[in-house]
Image 1 (cartoon, rainbow, N blue to C red):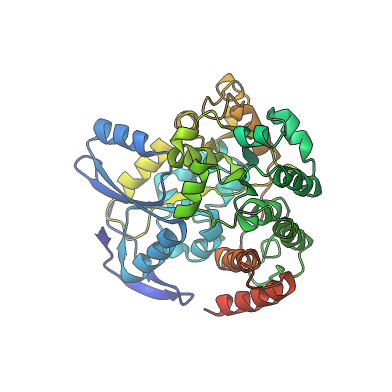
Image 2: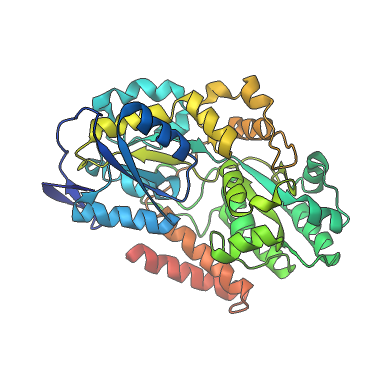
Length: 419
């Protein structure tokens, strides 16, 4: 941990302004603290970098929200890691206070911009031009499905045939009803919030905020958000959901036990499934998502301004996120590169996954990545997102009707925005 020495302006009531850290130091004999959420697929490369560059990297992994909340607290207290992952759901919150991060332009980071998808690069750039972070992967959306459970339900298992089952979300619900009627003992989806609402919401051009406008909230009127809610409610009312919260211990166990057959699947989810359910190799395949398109996730690696090892931290980030190393991470773990020069190469186009029944995952996610478009993420994106997820959870648990949950969710969003 690196202790900040100077504090300045208060940051939107959330963060204290940290002074820039000490001058860059040589990489030799340096220890870097890196905070992230869950396994990011970079661990093997970091071990390689340690051996080749004579440094030590201490990795601290937390849950998604826990990680970002810990980072907020650390920036307030002045005790910061040297490198911190910031996911897109929290991106605008941190970008609003660029002074607490090292401006990576001082190390020449602007020269890297053409390497990455333009909209992914922009997610790491503050309005004042400060380059806060360098992009890792992109999360183009597909659907992972259990071939054994589909076969038991009398449904096709070929990914093209499965994709044809659900050209749109209405057809997806109908397919779920067919699956449920077969009484396989499994539910169709893990949760309506995670594998329906979240995907439909992310297929639009707007979400909770008007484009590039942190002061205008549209979550109550945005047609795509209304569609996402209505589709998720339809899935609940059809009895398709196992009502298992994503990233919970029950979810991890359900993934391994076959408690649900379909899972909303950005590319990075492949890594998660393989880690949590290694014995299910060959029981999964991947199909297109209904109506296709949409992005779920993506991260920037940042260097807090109070780090005493900013140069060494940047050097590691720049080394980790080159196209060739992003390709290596994809092949090992499934996280899809944010570097488009790779998308039409044989290394991507011909890459298949044995774990996912030989699915042509390179081609699937390359096509998805090419179709992606930027969607503005506002400063309280995650706080709003949680309340919509909680509202759907109350319907799934039988605690509220759909109308009651909508009203309570809107009220809870307002409360969350006040805090």
